[in-house]
Amino acid sequence: AMVTTKGFMIVTVLNTILDPILIFGCKMGVAGAGLATTIALFCSLLYIMKNINTSKSRVKVSFDLKIVDKKYTKDVVKMGLPILLMSVMPVIMVMTYNKIISDQFGENAMNAWALNGRVEELIIVPAIGLVSATVVFVSQNYGNKNIKRIREAIKINSILAFALCRCCQISLFRIHSY
Image 1 (cartoon, rainbow, N blue to C red):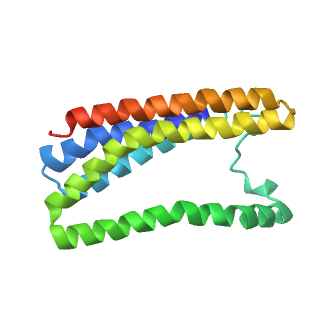
Image 2 (cartoon, rainbow, N blue to C red):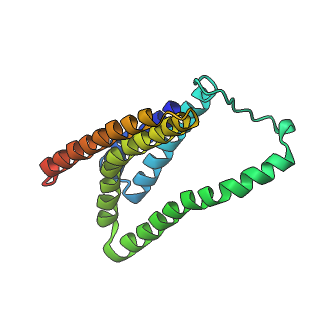
């Protein structure tokens, strides 16, 4: 989970840094936002590919197609298709928003919306990491029938999530006029 969380953070931080540089500094506009996202995603991909098999996970990733079992592939596709669709839908929605905003309100509105999205990601990505870690922790402890530990974890992570959101809220209120 840590490799994935760091991968998300790489995308968010790089996008946040590169967006204003490419959009305004290099005067690339919407193309700059797209290039910034592409660079950030590529850097994240390189980080994840380098570190995925060095993590503490007992499952190692292999790109050897000789070991693919059709029975398991069918089961994986059957279970993974709904998750894939859930992952693709936000992308389709953002593409639709991009089209509407750029066509109806112009490039400056599109740039402002893209930058706002980067700031939101700074809040959302740590929350996703916290939730992902909690799911794994709760699942492992449920398997061990350690309900007391689950309750403690949920309590602590709820406090952490509230504190994270509160800090972000205060920060956003302080910088809103910029």
